[in-house]
Image (cartoon, rainbow, N blue to C red; front, side, top):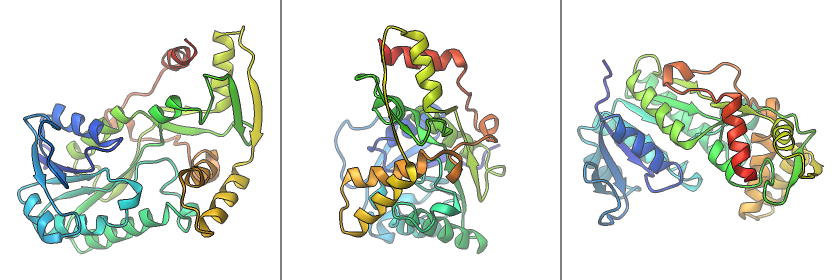
Length: 299
């Protein structure tokens, strides 16, 4: 029997948050949404919504009283401030904290000192220290790149313009999981309290390569001619880090750092050959499923 019956979520209105919230509600947890400001009708009537000050341990502690688990899906700019959430969770007696880290190479020591990733390692260290002192437990979910983003834009293949900008040689292996299945995996963590206690768990719905996707696309639509080019992930990463160091914090610069690491394949451990899919209740995509995804983009 799971020790988690009530769950709070911080960051429920972001990109991933709504999917996690739905999964928690569907799994019949008592759910509390922590928010800066209440908006009438923003959430289902079964969900408790509490207005909090995310900079105040006292405010968050009051909101977390009686809550067993806390899931954070806050944005990248708020990653480091999760120490306040953690302190409040401890004060309120929360049993499990899942930090906002969801990605495919966020646990690789090779990215620890890099911008974007460094705050995640600080949070992991903070959680480990608190867990060692017996104050709460934690789980980090490594889920790969979001499948929704990879197929929703032109990062891997530009389906709209039939262009493929291949990272390195196009054979970099990338684990990927859809956001609804990330929500399902989080439910799996909370329902398997002991098995997921104080550890990193991994889920991967599919391992992709650009060349594999391109081959599927060409097989489905041989009438389409694709324009290909290549870019080195190491060069992208170096360029992004240099521009960030020079004070450019724009999204294109952030994307260079992400592409230079997350899409560099096995260099940064971006593909998981061993996963916790079965424990977390996540099914892998079949070849037929992948063909359907590509066919939908070509339609």
